[in-house]
Image 1: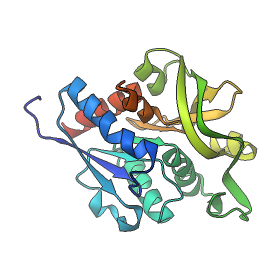
Image 2: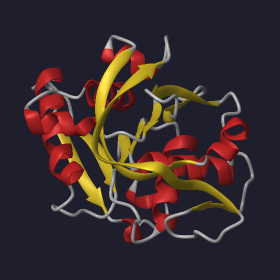
Image 3: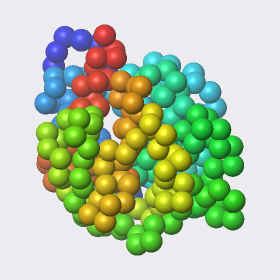
Amino acid sequence: MENQRPLHIALVGDHDPQITAHRAIPIALELAGKHSGHDIRFQWLATDLIADNGVLDDCHGVWCVPGSPYRNEDGALQAIRFAREQRRPFLGTCGGFQHAILEYARNVLGWADAAHGETSPEAERVLVSPLSCALVETIDSLQLSAGSLIAEAYGRQTVFEGYHCRFGVNPDFENELLDGRLHAVARDSAGELRAVELRDHPFFVATLFQPERAALEGRMPPLVRAFVEVCAKARL
């Protein structure tokens, strides 16, 4: 390992060893650490323990992990807002993608009534709604936007990734949501939105797919490696 102090990464979500992604994430970070030479320390942060930014101040990066509905939606949104406003590297996968969308809509666009259909299905503005076809244990192709952080991480514009997901962005609100700062960077084979980035941020990437799953097959997830490298730069 490089002679540097460790990287501290907060894993925001309610840890459950039965969730495939939760088994994959530590392995993905271990692979990224071995590849980059960084000593990575991660901490699972249960959403019901995030009442303010104090538990996040010392982290070099925030990863909002799959596993929604979270025990405390507000805790997850608090962590995402912290990463966005404090310009800490952020990665959101699956549930993390959904809640990154929700946080941006509420706190940047001012959509106070933006809701997640999994927890508030009767809300007027269901921004995160059931997918027309659930993506459960599914693999699909993705087209990545040229010049995006995610395309740079993979080194190509067409990739294949896996899902375990039933909710995504409601198409009725997509055009208003993607306001220029938050922009689409990946669409699937049907043209559906599958990843976003924030333009005025060092690294704010959220994907509906779960790139961490590659680690269970011994493959390093390129997006996790890119996230770790930006966390290392933020530490310096």
